[in-house]
Amino acid sequence: MTRSVKKKPDPATAINAGRTALPQATLGTRRATPFSYTPSLLESVAIEPRAHGDEPMWVTNNCLRFTSLCPVTGQPDWAELCISYVPDQLLVESKSLKEYLGSFRNHGDFHEDCVRIIGNDLSALLKPLYLEVMGLFDSRGSIAIWPYMQYARPKHRWAGALRDQRFAAYRPGGYGPQGYGRFV
Image (cartoon, rainbow, N blue to C red; front, side, top):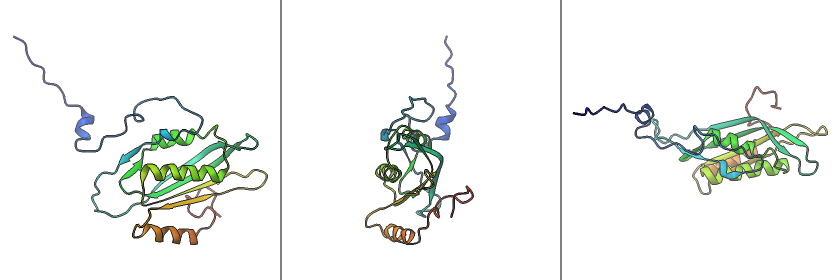
């Protein structure tokens, strides 16, 4: 007579019961690290139903050491990136964002273009209500360049007004995290 052994429940399954599946390409796995612009690294995670209804929320991802290459000299450019957005249904998965931003390491583009590319890629992936990206690039030749881009969902009841208000009130570095020594 054989005895049946009762299988223990998987704790991860029990914890995540009823939740959206997490990205499998990134979490818990290692993958090759590309050092040239690779937008396919970005992944999103669905937002869980909110306990407080449809209250909008801000999400900010701050990258303290972003690097890319100057397209003219080939020298490295260093920046702090501040990515802030009001999500609709998706969040950027943080490990994939880290790998994506790292893929710019050998990518040669002007500071303004890097910020625009990152903003466009995140807007296409997340379809947020509002998104802004600010790059606080270190000075070269005594000139620091701090590009700022915005996206607002077209025809959304308040996203366009938020974009207009934030743009009108913009001051260099004003929407970045305070306390890193870069605010003006």
